[in-house]
Image 1: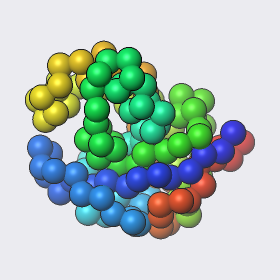
Image 2: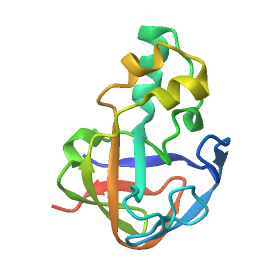
Image 3: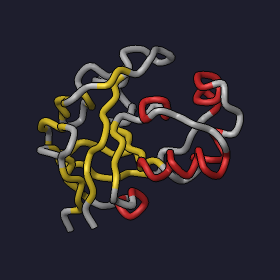
Length: 146
């Protein structure tokens, strides 16, 4: 039940564009260095989405989003992120703990201009805490630890 990191995106500002990167430093309790949420109290350390969810969004709802268009930091392939809620898992060198599903919000509709994006992405993302820092790179394994 392991998958892989397919894309990594960071946004320096809340409504700013997401920028693709090949790797990022994940810091325990602080988030991803260079992202808008880094070091912000109460913010999610890292958000993930399945590439398969973006493909279903296009096929079933006619909404095509590039991986960074979902506003999630890490796009994965081959792992059911829902199974990681409440569990520790590895993403590259970092160890994370899934806290809850990352549900889409009205902000995503505003940024994308796509009204069907909310319905199409319900229950597809994951919010997680970074409990052990490390570098995350494209191609890294995403796998549960327990």
